[in-house]
Length: 217
Image (tube, rainbow, N blue to C red):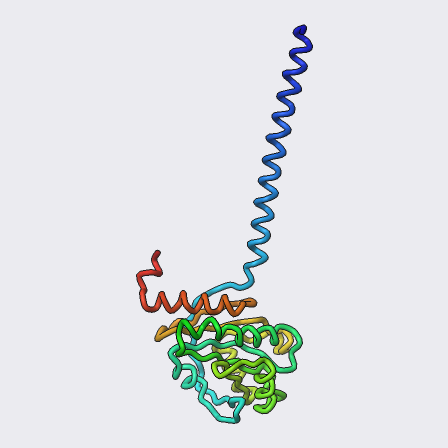
């Protein structure tokens, strides 16, 4: 074999190695990008913590009872709140179904909690409609629906920084508020949650409230 032929073979071998390395690097980068995209896609909600002053407004339950919202929320060891309206064909059915399913995960963790779904269309959502809506989603005894005067609901929305764009109920976004134990902090979750995610976040918050040192870990 002459020197020229040997040199050609060596160069060819080097080229193959370089191409293989480049392809591996491209494949790894593509896999990383795919993983990052998938992770972002599954990050459906954002968690934050706030101190809210729940207003002393009167709302009406699906059974027609008048309740003071501040006292109602405070009466429970833990409280979960979200906002829906019965004629909604968008996220509201998903929120309602999620809250119903969340109870299955919450009950084994802590029986002393209540979920409140507040109507964003109180002029239409009478107690009777809310009662039928609750039966439709089989929400059970831990999920309670509230309606009332427009001004009272608006005051509550303002207090928890949840006023929807333009005052149009169709613009409302999925928001879940959670107060666990005797904490003054409300956890706020912007975006769609699953029932499992609600139970997981609740358990995490409960553990932190009982063992504050865990927060620094």
